[in-house]
Image 1 (cartoon, rainbow, N blue to C red):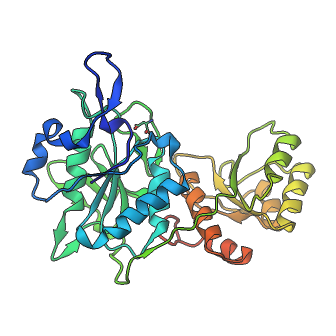
Image 2 (image 1 turned 90 degrees about the vertical axis):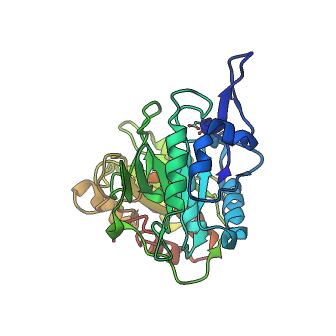
Length: 335
Ligand code: ASP
């Protein structure tokens, strides 16, 4: 179990009343039930502990490298992580760790572990139980997953949906991998099989990307500024509905110019509840297809960020990056 920071590892300072990180050496005091789990759990704090708002590609690489270096010593990994960017980290890890054959489960909590009504206790215990669950020598979920409030999700399909509810994550375009009640019910049909190849660690991520969220009234100046960021290699454009965008000539011309100069532009939907980009479905997305915008289908923005950083970091040509954007590499996008 790797503790990286976030709310889950906090407790109230008795004197000041403020939330402060607690030392995980004390975990058995806060979570005596951990002793009852049929698994030998080792705990590692990944220093420096961070609020996940401070996560970045260097942090993802550090975390992936730690798992890689310790891969043979453990049957599974549980990562305790702040909820704010947990979906981004889950997505990044799935790209950085190629050929995974063991569970890597991210979890956290809305209330600190040191607080009476915490959701952290259940989240940790269930995550460990799932990470340690092997049948016939095979792990039940050899994927990068996210566990929260009785549900196990494919990590790269999730996003944080609520800042207060215990049920804080959603996977709109992919079914849950498992549901936890009296029994743990695995949706085995939707779980990726363990890779038979050797684990590969990737460490190169190119962060020369930007997100351009469209909104009615977006100005030429705003679009031009984003597209002209020095060194920019790719843009994730959050479009309306099934991939629609304004058809104003200035808007299409700016995008076309940027694409001709070598910028990669991919389109994902702003609709959080589900659905996919289908360029050409409506007249308002036809020009995007004509100028070379790549439809990102049902990729979440969270997964698109690390997928692009990963692809750009691989030393591929632009054409190769464009080829791979709509193709599933780790189950992050539907075929
Ligand atoms: N800001 C915190 C974090 O993401 C919130 C949390 O842990 O839930 O690190």
